[in-house]
Length: 370
Image (tube, rainbow, N blue to C red; front, side, top):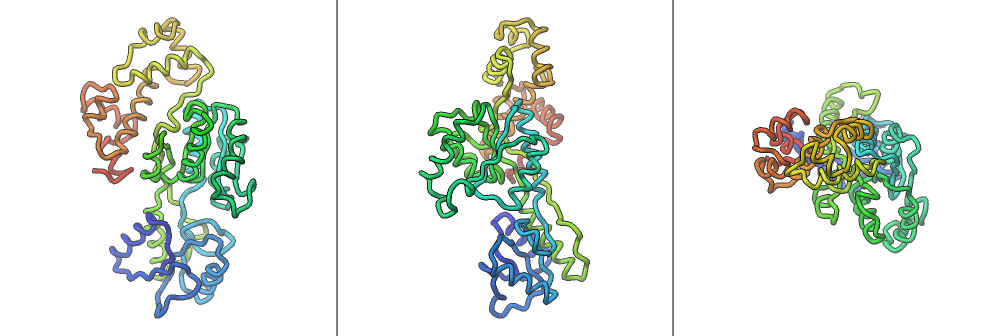
């Protein structure tokens, strides 16, 4: 038996069920056993509903194996298979640091144990991260009120020292922040870089500024939870700690495409380099554009970014390539040309050296696009 997880988790459960000849019963609100149910175990998503919690505790007392796919209610003592929330927060923190940002903030509509785990991971890299939680600022009945949201959040976004990166709990919240930034005339990503969680491609890719997002692996979450439930139903002992499913990485898009550096000379050079990524200048030409000597420009790259112009160009190219490859239309050849490579073979070799796999395999692994 399962009570409905979100669709990607459900896909993982269904895949495991087909591979192992399971029969599934779906309970939309898990408050009692479905009529005629005589099952061997349950996959659940505990999110604070008292009736569901009581029913799950009853299953445990009846010695029916249960696996929770979330960590909203750690006080309920059941085995869990959950995303590695803290690791995802750390990944977001490193992404902001790589962009050269000196400040980050957190935004979420509500605050639960899951939110705190994401925030803890982010705070390891950014220990003074401001935490903006909408439910602590407005009545919970007004969380979806767009006018109340704008009235409460506008002064806070305007008051943030900029440039700043904001990590949001999910992509829907990232889109809300983006819309308000645009209404206020705040530039994204130049003033506020926005990073969501979940990589909902429909939502992320159809914003005025496409949203970067942490890619959790909820399909694997569902599959691993079903696998654990199988072992428990066969008599295995439950794990002492939750099983953590690593996130897949980052889908980088324009909402975090920023390099926040203090040097106006280097900033000018980076903006020019980014604008000429398909036909990049030489180091000497870039120094001329920036109005400094080649040696001075090299020192600015090293002191501000910790990498050379060549390495920064490669980073820009790989970020642009990943953005293009996340869509269905761009071919490897088109991507190579747009990123300034003389041919597809050279692009594939550089991508493999930088990312650890070929562009085609990366796209298939990340987005299921062959």
